[in-house]
Length: 116
Image (tube, rainbow, N blue to C red):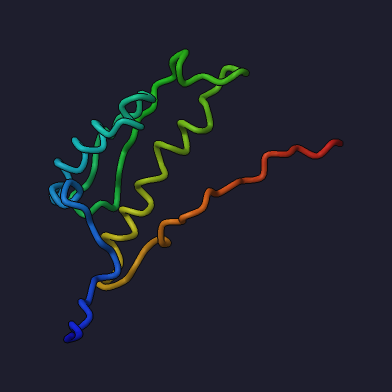
């Protein structure tokens, strides 16, 4: 049996659908149609060509309001989270990697509140 030489891969792999979003306009449209954004009323309003400035809007509706009447923190986090990685990836030099490898086991953030 002959051994095949190892295939060299780039540090960041991009899926087929994500590779279609090569222009800022296509990326903005794709993000606006992304189910987490679509379902929570998040809208990408503006995106610069170099991806150094992104404007995202979250309307204050009964679905985005928490118990005390302010915007739900999960929606606020969801509207900003993907853009930090995209902005950093576009700004860094080619060949650099951003992020971590996918985890095989679940992640459990702390959920206990200590008593005062």
